[in-house]
Length: 218
Ligand code: ADP
Ligand code: ZN
Image 1 (cartoon, helix red, strand yellow):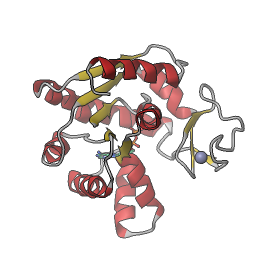
Image 2 (cartoon, helix red, strand yellow):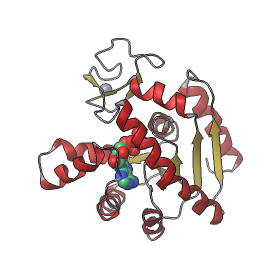
Image 3 (cartoon, protein in one colour):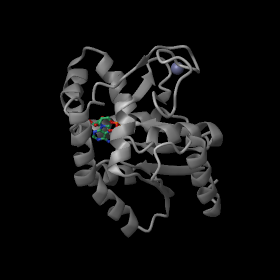
């Protein structure tokens, strides 16, 4: 059983690597961004409230996020463990998590800003299964369709240059302090750094897996 958090700026590859770690390790990925996108599809008061933050690149308020995460963790059968992607994003969220689960490891992705902007503007996602593509570096066989399930590919409305810049700013201001928080708690870190735009995800995931093995977590 491994309980991990994956940290990285928007576009650092969190979702892409987490989904591959999920299939390799048989663990669950819990991504708050995905949960919110599901909720925003419905025209409910909650969905509209969440949208008002997400579309500006701002953080959804802690009380909403914490409630959503608690519910998700309670209804997920853990089996071999989980990776949190996109949670926690504030110290308050981290403190709430401590009451629910003990985290074994932090996976930290270090990617320069220019790579992030290049990647996000060409990112496409399958509407059906959530698989992530990039029209330049992680190309689907057909620009419009998912290789895995044939579902339609779309661009996230918050993947525009202006909102991307806001998300990077929010990440640096609000999420970076979390790294210090976990370092102070002496939680082990696995760091993955890249300076290249076209590192194949498999290569990155293999490096992360090797480090997790060294820590005897998988
Ligand atoms: P990315 O990391 O690519 O910005 P995510 O899919 O993780 O994207 O999140 C998309 C948006 O959902 C965020 O910009 C934010 O508005 C909201 N969100 C997701 N997770 C959280 C969280 N833990 N706390 C606050 N807001 C969140
Ligand atoms: Zn698909």
